Length: 159
Image 1 (spheres, rainbow, N blue to C red):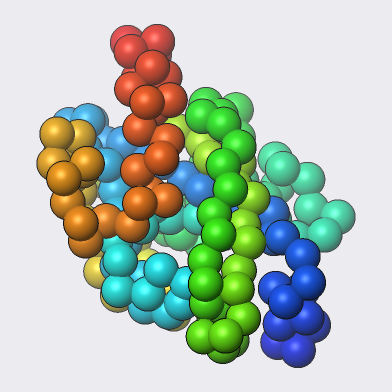
Image 2 (image 1 turned 120 degrees about the vertical axis):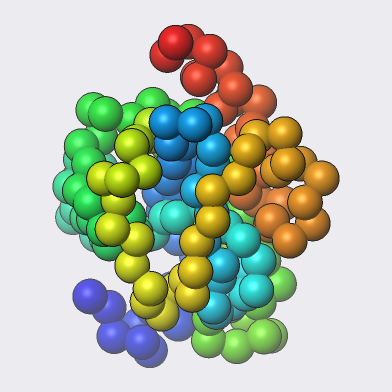
């Protein structure tokens, strides 16, 4: 774990590599959590987390899924939707410090009963949404919508 000052220096000076989890349940609904802190504070957002130095993508996926979903999944259970960039005008540290994330976004199909969704410093609550309601919903952050074309292709290919 990074000290706050070290992480702040990273946020100020370079992009952060992260994994986003596009989680779909047995009813083809998308999981979103309500963000508690910047960036994207007060928006509904897909779960995810940063990848640590010297952490393999396989291990990062296990850790991020366990932390964000309350259940650990394997990277081999997911489908890579693509690599996306997120640019924010603010950061968790300061509204004047911008944040740049590079996200490896993965599609994961789950049974919603298998999750133990945590209430923590990132999310205050969760909801499952039907695909048809996502695009017009302005409470969902635009960066949680950019993968939709890739998601729909991956879902079609997995059926």
